Length: 330
Ligand SMILES: [Fe+2]
Image (cartoon, rainbow, N blue to C red; front, side, top):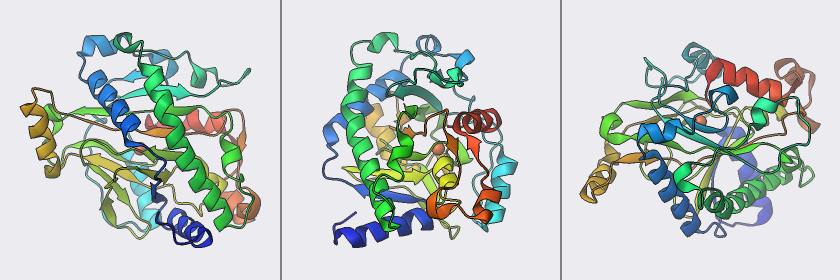
């Protein structure tokens, strides 16, 4: 966001969130170095042999902590196509014939509630054995920058609607926010057109897509246009997820997106190979969530009879467990 005056910027945030459900936040307070340090650690993590990563898998926690193997997360594709038809989106995504080949690591951030009805969403953390000294520290160095950028944007969204500054951010208190990086081995899955993550909407409140080390993320705008995400330095791409869309009674667009191998990633692959490294595409994604035991429903000016009929109240933990059950996609 370029500064044009605070009021004008807040109107632009509102327009982006309601229009396309996504906005690239340029925040000079976001330093590059901690992000790149984090990205490098994530690369080293995913480059480990499978046997090492298998130690970090927690099936009992529905993969909500630790490592998620390739071909585990999946999208109920017919449902996604139905949503697309409902929204009049006519640029079809890549067809999928299998579960997503991307791997993931889930790391929860913030304090856990003293008591929760959703213990599975607060399972004990997994610290990868080869990263004991650095894992938490490197995430903790970068996360506050990402959080501040996201919270500032949400405050601006509130101002754009003439609401209290903390109208949206207060909903995120005590939420089980996640650092949820993904990894794909481009030596095996770099053929252009190979789907890494099938079309889906994220299930949390808002997603912060960091600058990936290779292109491949595509978003659908409300008008049906499919656009590549090009995230610049010092920037974060914020995308509305299902909880925020629910609170806004659908006025915020929980945006569709997919990740696909593209030919533009070839220079990245060649650079890594020249350095003697296995070519992996990794993301540095954060999912912001509402607290698991809160009720979620359209609020304030978004609470109309029409919105309540389409977005009935539901406990956040139930919404997450339901979505994890039908999509397996965070
Ligand atoms: Fe996603």
